Image 1 (cartoon, rainbow, N blue to C red):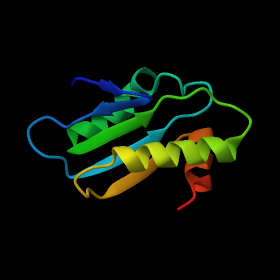
Image 2: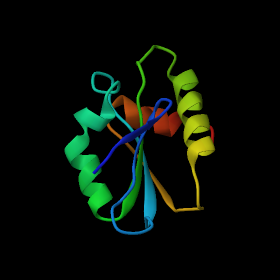
Image 3: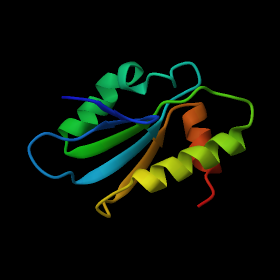
Image 4: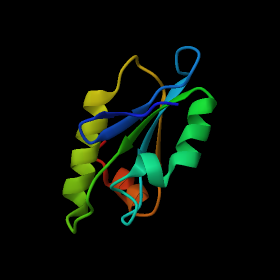
Length: 102
């Protein structure tokens, strides 16, 4: 499995064919800077099941609404192929998904 960085997103495509869906992942505050390492086992297991992964690398701050907006815009601009998307977050990452403007 080969992770690719696109700006602040770490992306992983499933091997052997087109993805069944997309996981947009935001990690918790202490692990958020390196999701491709901190959450590797979880995200790679999802990828092995046919899901494309987009994991946001960020430095947590105190303005959670601004960070939620930033993540939402980033995921929205990077989304392709009209794949069904699952938003997954751990700790602060879950809160940021919940604060997203859509």
